[in-house]
Image (cartoon, rainbow, N blue to C red; front, side):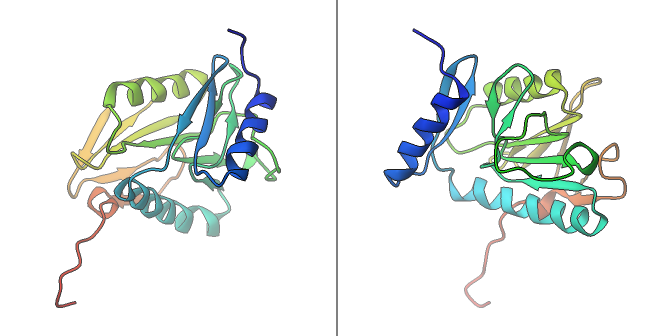
Length: 188
């Protein structure tokens, strides 16, 4: 079986989009991975994180925040789209109308209902090996946030513990509990 190129992937993504299907494609070692739509809890967690990051990053002009549709061509030629990512301003001065050819400084993967944790951990480790400074795994089922860095042990947070990323976003803080979708009472 021959390897698929990024150009091949773009063509296939175009066909999928024209058919009205909501699938994102990634390329890893010449093989295509297809990601279907996420469950709504995972999607809402992503939006809540993006909102918190953007509210801090944008007024300070620290860089750019991307959702799961933002594709990155990594140094190993894989094309990946983390659920949430951040790139420092000095590394991406201007957004381009193509995939960014770099590794995001921050990558976040949010466990979907059908995901298993070990493959997500492996994916995050690959991002770190390619040059990401921080990788985060959010598990809505267990309501945990695990922070990975190139060195040291992973740090798992939960409840009212505070997520910080001082090496990228000095001063930014987020209560882990703020990531989880609220429950609206009938009398509200």
